Length: 496
Image (tube, rainbow, N blue to C red):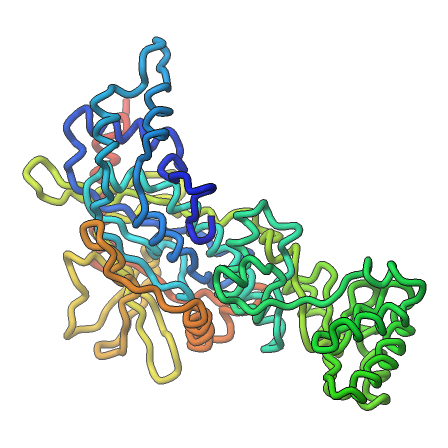
């Protein structure tokens, strides 16, 4: 889905769940399609049991919404669908209505690379309810996956302690679109380069790679294989040394590296892909240093993730570059982000906003009413708290702001008047027209790094991270409680 490019030039309008279209039909059939509504896309818990999440996928959202049209073959297919009575599921006039469909909502979103937290809207869609409903599934598809991968990459890069992380997940990613999206999101999350050449072409991500075991095995000896590669590509020589005997492979690499040096070429180091990476990297470092190649880095691969990297560093491994593949591109340990898209408000027949709340026996699943924005507060030491508030009732400028934990109304935090702040949601579309120019992907990566640097180190811990304060502005919390009580009275059975 990366780049929101339709296969073979086809429309992506039907990349949705059927119930989005049946609801859209119902709105149209009952004359409710012109009512305005507000939807918010958010998530309830951090992935990987972590303390933060990295927003990603907005570029695909922009591309998708800009190009959203129902093509003739889309409409032909919808016309062919039947209900239980074997009659058309959708009336012909509704099909004609979709033929002229042009997305007309306002969209606000957090820029890619923004650090976000549970219950905060990553996207806000405001406009005709039919339009906002139709785009729910594709927006979740784009934001959920890329945000998940960007977060995994940020965790891996943090564990690497600033040393380069290369994304090598193409061959085991979840299909072609999953591979492209994963490479892009991994770069936003902090990876330095990718092995995925198509992603390099599409997004300008640096690409890296030299040789694999098959190259070595195709020659009569490892030394011959290294020598042949050095003659073929002297400007890209990093040798994979574990095809036969790893430490002997390092010695063979050194032998060819000396030849490279004599011809004026730089030896780019070695790669370890199996065995005891801590022990082997320490011993390999000694061999390289003794031969005068103190600047030749050791790259490690072999099912790495943030936990393994942290362990290897604690063991004193002499690894300078980390190649992370399967466990990054597949978001190992967390198959999905679990983002949700909920209605926050809808206009009545007179055009007045009526705030809505979804109930649940689980407090975390009770939705947030209103037209929401997120304000991030900071002081001289960094970020201190986020307040979710209703734009129709802005946070007072001249008094302290109190936030209430959405899962526990007894937990409050007061943010002092005058604290520096930034509103996270920025305008992306107005009435369906794009008003936002996405920055280069390198800026999204830099934003993630800057933002992470502004948070307390505790939220970055892999185990039992600190909980950053996020809450509903007090008046919004009170309104939510009131709406919950009203909804329960109106919709739950009376006691007998």
